[in-house]
View 1 (tube, rainbow over the protein chains, first blue to last red):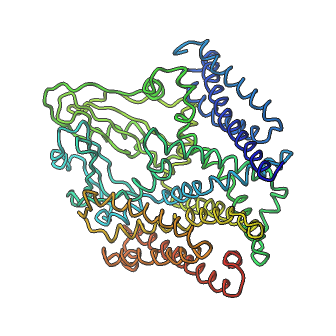
View 2 (view 1 turned 45 degrees about the vertical axis):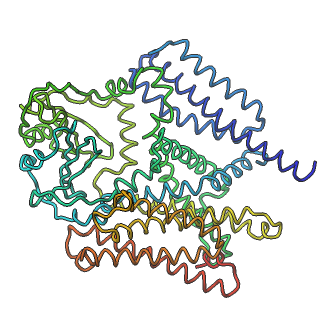
View 3 (view 1 turned 180 degrees about the horizontal axis):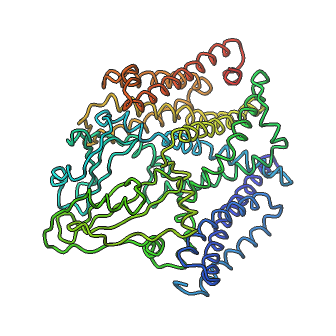
Length: 100
Length: 512
């Protein structure tokens, strides 16, 4: 590869990593936040307490996912797992129905 | 990105810092100043520099009667230790207006015509004055998450974190010294930086991670009604009178163990269905208590009380209180200020270390990275300080009632701030390394000018402000401005002196 091609492919790797870690990481954290809110109400936590706990949990989950997102060796596997977490979380919301 | 966990954390620390450090500096700088936002208000609104005095709320009935009854509600903020005036506010078709009342005489003071600390510096800290679609809150959120990542990755990439605590070698090579300063500020300040960033994010976590509450509630108001209760009723259309606010406040304080009142509001003023809401002051607690009680405005009868906070709400209120520093404790307040400045030093030295470790190589290879990042650093560090001081100077130079093309004085001060900030970035891009010296000189000149202008325009020189306890906030702000001006002047002087001895200015700055 020429020098320019190396630079371009490195830039593409970096952009892909940031998009996956920050973007998909956020989607996964948001999915987990929704799942935690619903699961907490199901195990008997008051609705408002479950809601407040969920967004604080979301912050911590996102921090952990971001760290993992930037440390994980294989980008493809990382993207798949993050997408799966997001789908599972939002899927649970659909199953639980509006107003849970 | 490198291979291995430590290498990827090193990459993350470097690039998250370089890309978001400028924004983080702005947030940390404004947050640090916000610790003394009420004191900055006094400095920028000389008419409110009045001695504290107890004031009866019923005595201001005459002033209340002068407020427009077209307003949907009135707000009354009683005087407190850090805010000696009583404030009356209302919102009508012309927007939100505030009147200050001298507690000693009960008379209305002239409009300060400034956003000052609580309405410019503090909101800048958390929303950058970008209101559309909560854009500023989201940008600050991204920066906050980056700060947490920087704290974690910073700990991981340091092999000897305990040794770093005791390592500072000002006489060593400048690059080593900058890294030492970055490490010392980072390690000593680490618990504070993590706690302040996390608690700041918690305050807006409701906005950042809404999927949880949205899965459980149709409307945000339903959530808050569940969390803390509330009270509202429509206007009746029948005229009514306002009962004794003092008696309502006394009743509310009785319910809260004698605690002070934060503020009260009158909804549907002048209507028979008007009601008064009173909020408890959080000044005695770290936890940001926000207990409320509602009274019938005419009879003063208790209508409703907010619900006691349950554990998750208590945790949120504790973290919010930890961040907002609404409690009255001067020693801790100063500690917040000093640790906030340590955060600013941490961010600035991070940039300087990045620059110094690449300057030579980039120069040899003809890369532009160092030039771009250096301009970004100068604009966001000295430029931000310069713009803030220009904001103070503009406040003392623009006369009350002045306006340019329909832009009122308060907005002119803000324009001044942003004009100087943008000019500082342009100047840094044009003048390269020389901009360090020139902007430091600018900071020194504006800092000194602010102190002198305060003296000339208000008569409150240091001897006077130091000898009158109600002017101590003014004295302290003047003294801090003098210290900042002296430090900037010394830095500019040593940069020039060492620069002439051949070393590039930054080296000199490092060993100064």
